[in-house]
Image 1 (spheres, rainbow, N blue to C red):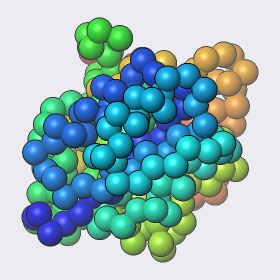
Image 2: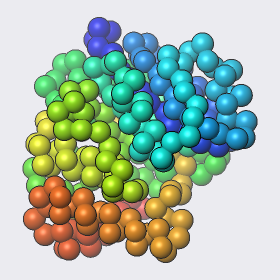
Image 3: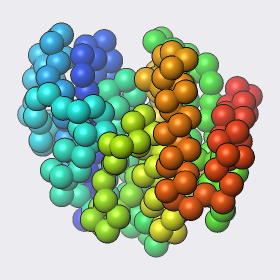
Length: 248
């Protein structure tokens, strides 16, 4: 298992309040064959100072303006040399010190191309305010609004080489579109890791305003149409409805 290498990408911009917790959650992992990549969008707060404190434990780091979070992720993918690629946003952190060990074990012992798990939404004090329990994937579930939480999404590097990186034409739905493309359209083999992998601070770009929510829905619809969802107008209704279960 230690021969398998995981490239983990953190993209960050002006996240001085959360970036250290994110980084330390990576550094405490029991699995140590990690290429840790940090892509900073040219932060103007204390984020670069905090990153520099941990620079000896970061394998690849750049700080420069970018075209947004998915452009930054693509930069990280281009730098990745691992067998497996995952992302960890600056406002998120790994739920325990065995997350990457469990990811590596699954990819080493199974034939899956993709792995995903569960996620807790938390407040700034770490209190759980919402739960995302993904459940096992079955073929066709994307047609009914299902999707895994992107922060838990890990896949073999070959998928990016075969099917491409994040497409910037989908705005905040670029992560949803990529998962649709890999799993639904190209039928990548999927494994569900039945555990909480990520703690995620509540909030998000697509939910900050009504106009952002409308743009997100339109981008979702575009992603559905371009990746062979059977009934995109119905699916776009199912997708937010599924989120209701996250409150229980």
